[in-house]
Length: 408
Ligand code: AMP
Ligand code: MG
Image 1 (cartoon, rainbow, N blue to C red):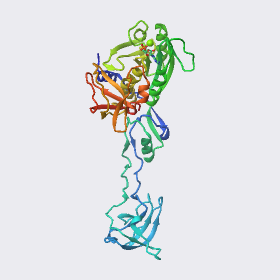
Image 2 (image 1 turned 45 degrees about the vertical axis):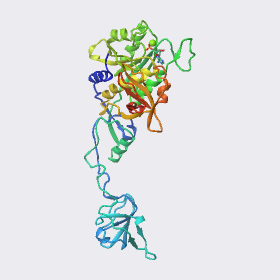
Image 3 (image 1 turned 30 degrees about the horizontal axis):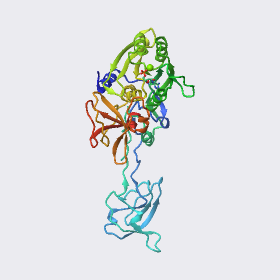
């Protein structure tokens, strides 16, 4: 049996980052992976400017509180003032460039306008040099790196790219993944369920996981539990895709055809991974044609149980895809958190428990941890990574991985 980390390391040692990239509009780049470093076209901010509505002053004029200055100019955002002469102040508004000669901003709340003296302001404080001044280039410097290749683009990165002046970004092409779902018992929602039938939930879970990671996903539907049908689906899936994922049929029972089908169409390792839920996982590759130069599509076969396929996707398929995408960070962020539950039956396997953060800042456990109970995952907001042979007692610190860290 492999540990989860051994399985991940093995997968990562095979995955090779896609080389093709494309130009997309900055505002269309959400969820994409930056292919090249982005250098800023401009200084941000472009000039020293004020962080407050108030008055630009010369420190030399306001050594004692109560100094009275003449208001010699007015500078709204978007316009440039003139040299600030001694004993004068400039009325100034947030974002407006600080006029030359000024070395501090006094916010308007710290000033009074002497009665009947429309052109004068009384400064009631003694500001420090640089107070409320945002320095030119303190956010980004022209010509310097604003975003690095391999970054997963979130809303804030799109904003940084826009502030750097970029209309377009070079991003990795999307990873292309085909998925099919094995099982004679499966039906699609909307279809009648025959006796013994169940709805195919893995389709919606896994296709949505792929979309969350920014993949192009192709749904090849339900494939019956027959060797020829499974081989046919694999041949179809290999065309035009980097990776094939499947659910179900990875055990070695008579009704499990993944292993012989992938072996016939390419090559396969069937792994037993010491995790729960999960355990069997198939990893291999499927030939794209009879010609070796046409290459292969990677293959990962997940177990059929809905929680098992979801968790094994997050633990094993996600890092593989992130490596294909060329992402800079692959391991999901985890946090030490307090367990507010007992989990006393320590398992020989590394367990991934469905939990939820409670209002006391601890973790609650979903009562039914069966690998068939998918509501455990929708109730929960993450997983506790419980090492093999370790029980958990209420109050213990545990390793918590939020689903949000596993779905992006
Ligand atoms: P298998 O891995 O094929 O032995 O399936 C294990 C369990 O998962 C069985 O109870 C299947 O009915 C169930 N299962 C397999 N595929 C799916 C699916 N796509 N959606 C929901 N349940 C499934
Ligand atoms: Mg099956």
